[in-house]
Image 1 (tube, rainbow, N blue to C red):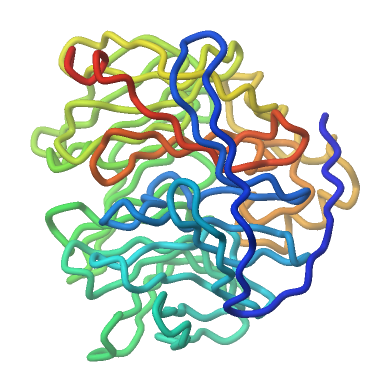
Image 2 (tube, one colour):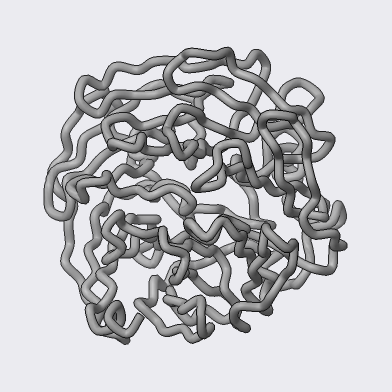
Length: 390
């Protein structure tokens, strides 16, 4: 296991750091790779359900611990300087999400949903929840709502916060842990979310608060990393580590798209291609053709891909957490989910996972790797020949 020793730099909103750019080529595929960070600290892109690239492709938003606590930064792609956006402590490291026009970044911090202007660096609290922890942000198709997981006092749920302040924030309670709520790409009345423990996949109707379980399954069917298949509106998910599945929302049927150990999955807007990383064995970041199930490698991140549970084909049970370090067991009971745990060795740490995601023009892959000894942000260019074959 890689031990990350962090070098702490002064934290100052708007601070500008010299470019850390390195031009690389994947030594197995020849793919062009841009290394954007090289700080001796944890650096990772936004969670893979959100694009880290601004819509114009000129900048990339990422999280860095270079000032001891996780903060948001932006880098002018590919060789430009790095600018620090936030400075306050308590930010959820994977919560960042860009507005539709790319002018604002939404994130969660200490029970609040915030926005920051990339131009002025002015921050606005869009909604606050007392005694609460919040998860990653997902933006509605119109850009007018944020949805995020919430753990408040003794209950869990799903929080909705308006980005333009017309309505008050609302919460839908749920009796189990909520993970990764996300808006349907075409219908902001529909929100898909994961729940722990199994069954995993659920659909929330925002207007009524009705919640529907989409797939009844037990702990031995390891369903993970579900998300919408672009503008098809269907849901894709991994049955770890065996296959990639598709759930048709119209007829409620499941089909197998491909048989491979797809791990974290990121469909393109059209829904005809899916990026995924792999683990046990790690056979690189792969591009999957939805219609045929064929897939080929883009590059090999060579990240450490930690987490003991990924060596199994079931969810973690209480005894799995009990076998972990004592401090980890204590942290598990206090955090929103394992995503927020600093000491998690069961499913993470998350920054050791590549988490591939698309650039807006769908010509590049953003990922994180700790191959250098510290997690860094990379961008791989999808070879033109590979894109043409699709």
